[in-house]
Image (cartoon, rainbow, N blue to C red; front, side, top):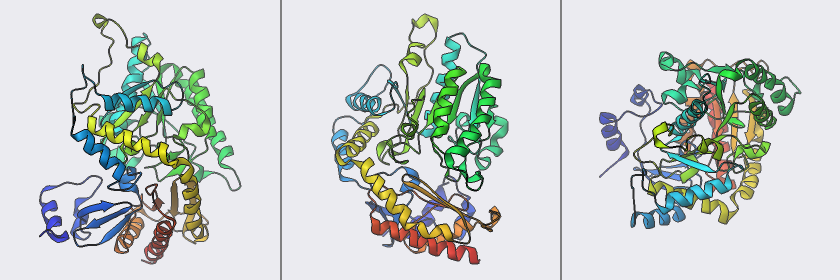
Amino acid sequence: MSSNQSLSERDLSVLWHPCTQMKDHETSPIIPIKKGQGVWLEDFDGNRYLDAISSWWVNLFGHANPSINAALKDQLDTLEQVIFAGFTHESAISLAEKLVEITPSGLTRCFYADNGSAAVEVALKMSFHYWRNLGQTQKTKFITLENSYHGETLGALAVGNVALYKETYAPLLMDVITVPGPDCYHREPGESWADYSTRRFALMEQALQQHGDSVCAVIIEPLVQCAGNMRMYDPVYLKLLRDACDKYNVHLIADEIAVGFGRTGTLFACEQAAISPDFICLSKGLTGGYLPLSAVLTTDRMYQAFYDDYQNMTAFLHSHSYTGNALACRAGLATLEIFQQHHIIEKNRALAATMAKAAARFHDHPNVAEVRQTGMILAIELVKNKQTREAYPWQERRGLKVYQYALSKGVLLRPLGNVIYFMPPYIVTEEELLLIADVAWQGIQRAIKD
């Protein structure tokens, strides 16, 4: 009979896990999960864990969601996968139609890929290739923000700026132009998010003025730099950036892989600035956390730049064997139906207010520099000194201690360094949010004492 110990031993004999120093598991056991139900996960020894981070930000409506389950079972009986070159199927068409309908205006073409990093690669290549097809071969560069993260394939890694992810592979990466960002953690005392983000935009304006002729696109994570310690900024920055990209003839790529599908309080973060990017990259919550799928939505102008006689060799060059996978597309459709049928965005506003209330006590904690929130994302920045904002040395791994304590109390929190964040599924209850906050508080108390 399987147990946590037996499965952990089998795992460690053959597997290599992502974003993990495997030696840690000599002292911190792997947790084998037997089943999931709603916001709860259960291991083989009967322990339960509240999934407070949506299983790496993907699970929107709970594990074993009956609506998504039913859709997948139906799809499985008809078509699981077909080559997407020269063939198509109804689930892929219907999902693309729906995405065109709900994303910001002007995004009329959908290109499928397998995951978030792949979506970013598609957008980067498509932007570059667009300018090439138009004869503007001098446009080869990309502008990105400091502290940004866009994935870990080589192109996506190159346009990111989180040192932990990027420095090791630097010799393999293309050169990009990195601009200081609008991260409001660094604003002056009394300065509003909007004022700080506006002031910081001057640095982006300078970069576009100086390099616009050689730049294909600017790529950003709208409103929240998730892997960059959940740092946040004001929508005014997006509005200013959209105008500047138009002014300097540069594309705008919105990486909404983590912040899309209701995470920031609107269906897509770009809505809060009333802008439409030239590309929007989607993944994670797209299938409700069930299957890997990503989509890049772009404009008809982009599409027409590649639409030509074959002999002119202008077609876009990118493919994945599982492009437009039928099961994944059906999961995506079922997920979007839940949004529509259950008025999720409106409900999330109430949930976000409850989350803020649950975390209110952290504002006055002597080792918390900031509690920040955008919609259904709340982050607590743990520091050694509240007045100076001196950080704990990263080697002390204070956030890891919070994680380990939370697991012992039945809550899955996986901090980013010393930033503890809540990013739960949208079906979480008030009682469960209070449990998450209580366990985080207790975990922080223990982490700062060690």
